[in-house]
Figure 1 (cartoon, rainbow, N blue to C red):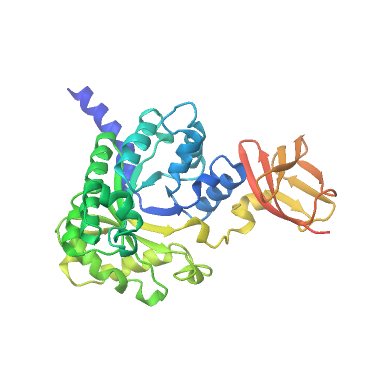
Figure 2 (tube, rainbow, N blue to C red):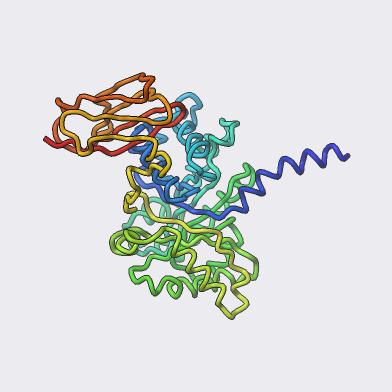
Length: 384
């Protein structure tokens, strides 16, 4: 009997540790154009690591499926390799699949997960994104109405859209529970009854806090937090901040990504109402990668790596020298803005490589350097 108890306890330890961590999430838009492009993948993952993100929620997975067939174990390895690389080498603890219908989760993402035994290659989160409150999408003649509501026999209004949305989150949550995946949903506007239904269904709620005036960071979501708390059960809530220019993009260009979440925690702890005891601010999420100010020095290279690796001159004219103080350089690739490799150089035991740039036109390029097991990307500028 003791033998079996010990096995069960040890199998739960990694799961408990994972669930206890604060989520620091980033929506990745345009993922279909990033996947299988080494430069773009490295740029995304370096950015995420440098800014402390540990959760990536991926858009554009249907186009990815069309290209790589995620239900085929042979063709979907490009996605499996990306997810494993993110988790193994860049501090990502969860990767989420975003979708708006049950068919996608059940017939594509669930199947993808089932054919990968390695948890490092799996999706950890099913994220339902269906804006039932958006009248521009649900009313007659618009996208949700013609694609989902009318064919399903629902009315083309916000009430009909919520009824349809309920069926989605119930079904997605069911397959998530059966397969050991977290269910979550993004929501904007809702009433108290809808908040209770949502909270009773999914594992965590992503709540949009899209503001342009930073002083309204907490007041903008306060009432909706109370709606969520009304079921009197502790609920994981992840506020979403927007880096779009019309929202917090200008603010974010000179501030840290974690600051709004820290301030929300302070506001919530200062609340006097007992309802606050039913809200667990699980972390934060930023929308979206393409809007984030890319303020990572030398494309996200940690300070100790910058000390060891020298690239000069930059800007360059006719030649570029790469010097690695700590070890040899295995290979160097110069990549243009289209992601094409245009110059390659290999193998130097003394840690120095000189690259001839005389045939390159002026412009911005990327230098991808492999040293041992590390792959480092730097931006370089060529002038004439």
